[in-house]
Image (cartoon, rainbow, N blue to C red; front, top):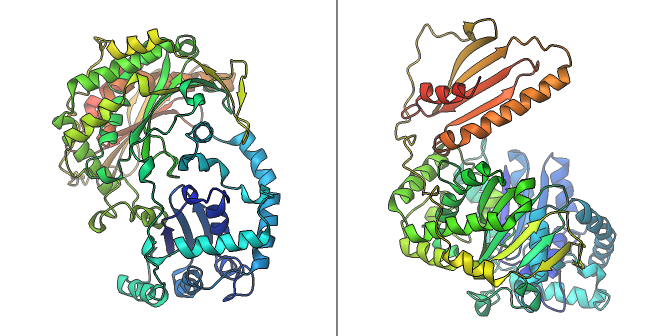
Amino acid sequence: ASCGLCVRVGSFNDPPEVPGLAHFLQRMIFIESEKYPNENDFKGFISLHGGTTYGVTDCEYTRFYFDISETHLLSALVPFSISFDGFWIKKDAITRERKIVFLMLHVHIEFQLNSSSNKHRMERLLSFIARNGHPSSKFLRGNSIPLNNDINDDKLYEEVYKFKKHHYSAHRMTLAIQAIIILSLDTLEQYVQLCFNSLSSNWLPSDDFTEFKDGDLFETDASQKTFKWIKPINHISQLHVIWVLPSLLNFYKSKPSKYISWIIEHKGNGSLTSYLRKKMWGLDVFCGNCDNNNDFGYNSMYVLFEIIVELTEEGLKYPRKVLNAIFSFMNLIRRMGPQKSIYNELYKIGNNNFRFFSKHNDVFDLCKGMHFYQPCDYLTGKHIYFEYNPEAIQKCLNLLMPETAKIMIFNNRFKKNIVEPHIKIIYKDMELPDEWLNHWKSIEPLSSFHLPSRNKFLTNNFSFIPISAKASKYPVKINNDSVSEIWFCPKFNWPVCHINLHIVSISHLQFRKSKNAALLQMYCNVIKYLLLDKLYPAITAGFSYEIDVNEEDTGIIIQISGFNENLSVSLCLNRVLAKLP
């Protein structure tokens, strides 16, 4: 069994004089209290019975989670619920916890310096250059309390008490509980009523961020230099193009940014990805809301919408040409406008993915989603398209202009200029020439670009494929010649049909096995790149395939699976095998 509770308060709500307060309180919730005088009573009980517990402070929400065997769920819910009630934390517990966090912080900072992801580093840098006084500028300071010598323990105790009393109110909490084997829904409902009905509400409003909505996130001098070279944590090279859009939380039914990102990161014929690969400038393109599930890039004030290109060595030499291609493709999407036919395909894909592929039973995510969606959409709101809203799509497209874009390139080959002081991000500012911006505003779509074509692989029929009584349960050899063996074995796991082909190359290069294996793997990677244009529509419709070297490093395994209605196995196999010499 598992339980998740989400409070509508986060690091954006930190008082200016006590940065990091929301995160510090999250750490204190299950520490020694007047009700449970032994420190870590709740966590100790969970651990003793084989469970886990943790909490996360996001920018606008704070989440708490535990799991435990179903037989001990009620015994765990009682102290869990009391932790959010009106009792209070002991002052000496706050003093001890502050010392513990101080010791952990030095290790954490060193860890961030060496292992923080590029996406995390980008968020940190955006927070660093955010407009002074904007809530997003607080994102950097989640662990600031132990380092703040201006706040003594008595003052901190008062601030923690005041913060909890104001924000930790029942009317700002959502709860999700799951049990699979023993406990029924009626029993779970009784548990919730027993443990949580006594939680009180103060009915105080959340902090008002109205003045920051639909406004400019970046107004500092540093942000005016929108072209940044950033030192990554590894040897990859990436180009990021980022826009700040108004909040889209109220548009979850139409998902306008997902419609746009789906077109931009499409990898079929006529796509941006296909063009960059043919030019040898980019390996892949990703697009969507810039969010690490922490609210920094998707919240009640704004959305960070980004395009990411994984650059090749050649692409790194010509970033302007890559950017020309991006803005050329963006102008195509804007000129063509919203397309109902594309929305209809996304609607069908979203429904199919929700039914057969998406995991939507995670209470840790569900309790947070309950703040965004209507009750009837708690499970489906994240995954499904409910309505077509061309006006919202066009409004977003009109905001994705070159002059409002923030451009960043992650690469090691530059001399450092500026060092961000918190986790030592090294970067360099470069002015964007007006000539570039003017060119991007008027650039024509390339002749090779077009919107995704109709997807003929989408299916409506999820019935079983009849299985012949003569079908073998074991692989059958269907081809054997001087250069290869082909083994075939069908598997049926509703609603997907799996076709496995084991192609074993009878190679005479049995010596120098490691080199042979490396060459085979490179060969498989090339085949997958060549196939992507043709088979990407099938992949979006639920079809999947794998091409990899077998365990013996003597040949290639091809695995194909998908729905049966519009999945032409022979067509897919022909496209795969046509690439094999």
